[in-house]
Length: 111
Length: 250
Image 1 (cartoon, chains in turn yellow, red):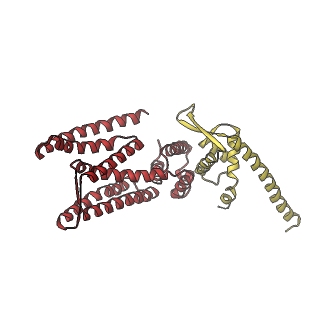
Image 2 (cartoon, rainbow over the protein chains, first blue to last red):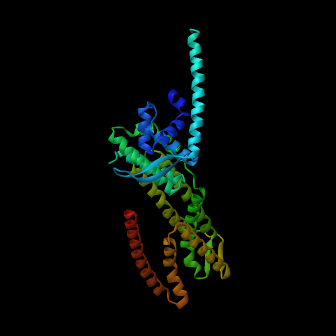
Image 3 (cartoon, rainbow over the protein chains, first blue to last red):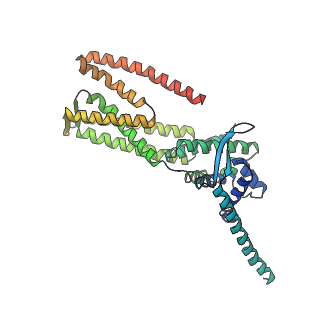
């Protein structure tokens, strides 16, 4: 539960990063997330987020026939999405630094 | 291919999105995407719960809240039902140039119609959110669809027993009502891209028109009506048959 709460603001950025690398469909995104270690959240969580990111024009989608089987909805990042991803990276880096500093400081003081 | 639980979840989600007024195209998109996901997930040995979490209801709401609600469409659909019902019951009498309804009949009809719409919308939403089985759901929906018939039967019986002031219209006002209803009918038909409603009204009205035009006896009008009903039944079956084929083809 605690992890889920922490993830809430971060998962959008992770989805953008995954989509920015190559064209992917829903199930592939979920699989990538799992291999990166995000195993605590249920896979379906990505779909409401994908819907929202499409509304906000951070990603677009195209339905096309996959090599093995059904028609699938593939996701692509937009210019706006790339800008958002860059800003997410900046925000994450500084946040990570700050949290690390706090935790490190705690250790140094031997608390 | 899908497990029973998944099928049921998909069915419930589709129904939920429909009754909360989402657009058909967007519904189909998200449904086929989730179906695809569930198929692959089950192949990898995951359960529905792994995908949608603990609460199907919460998951449906999280999907629904990210989709646009087609309020205009919902109001339009309700209006279409009301106008359709009014046209079917009024038009055959409009062409005779005389409208006569007791106050009791007018008010009770309106109340039943409104109650029907509200209960249909409400129960459909509740049913799709809950995990009711298909059979239970269809029993409930069928009950709600059939109830108004019996209510109307009862009310019209009472109507013959009690006397309330009645509203009688002849001439120009009747034709104005007819014109208004026709315009509504055409608008609804263009909007829904279906001529079914106009066809039904035409079938009901045509014998009456012929009676007035050719000064037929009541008996031959009745005969004409039954021929028309027979014909329309065939047309309806053919229509449904071809529509079904078209759906399968696409």
